[in-house]
Amino acid sequence: MKKRALILTAVLTAAALTGGSGYLPVTDGIRAKMIQNVYADAEDSKESADTETSDSVLDQATIMYQQYNYDEAIKLLKKQDDFTKNKDYMDLAAKCQIAKKSLVEYPLEKITHVFFHTLIEDTSRAFDGDSKSGNYNQVMTTVSEFNKIIQIMYDKGYVMVSLHDMCNVDENGNVTRGTILLPEGKKAFVLSQDDVSYYHYQDGYGLADKLLIDENGEVKNQYTDADGNVLIGDYDMVPWIDTFVKEHPDFSYHGHKGIIALTGYNGILGYRTDIAYKTREN
Picture 1 (cartoon, rainbow, N blue to C red):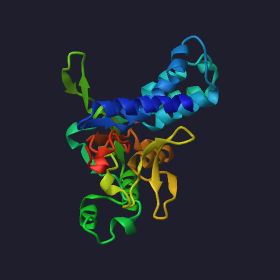
Picture 2: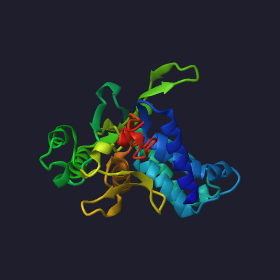
Picture 3: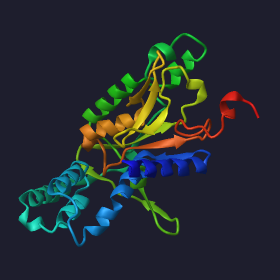
Picture 4: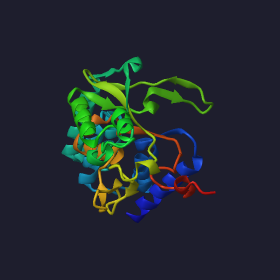
């Protein structure tokens, strides 16, 4: 767990140092990067030895299968020394081969973009009738509304894809069209969240305080309730989507999730680079 926390800290620090406005993929930049680094050594050594249990390999390959990543699932299974002797491995590989044949190319021009600001947890504080209430009501979404929207999209067959699936960039910076393959009837979309800085002006209005790593090594929010209690959980888009994808892995294409648009104003992800943002001094 310490290793994962250190990796995420390094990623967040690097993101903060870049400053300015930009895009930081939730999965490609934070979550997947963390997982990728944690397991990198084990993956490199698998060519000569099986370093994972049968159940662990099968679980990983099953998630890949559920997320339409059939080639990688087959590759992982066939890499195991006992592949030809393991019925579960061979059955899953066969299912991947069959499912792969049913994929169709999704038209990139039809990919929609669904965007949110940071979410409101406590509506009684956000919509308390003061001068900020109207703006919150106009441009923000509550956690309850977000949950319902995502569930409806999942039920209608929407699947999160990454901007990096939509194009290929070679070593010279040349960009060409990418290819997204999904089962017939599925609909690709890009999910993003803007201004994930947890600004000072939001303090006390029922929004999350920041992103952090919990005791289980998972990305969660710190949230302070109306009574001043500090809670850790799914109080904004990033951890909520992580939890939703755990329960509905087929909502994610190849494990991809969302994009965070960072301004750098008032710090980054709830972490302050200068107290002057709040005090207005110096």
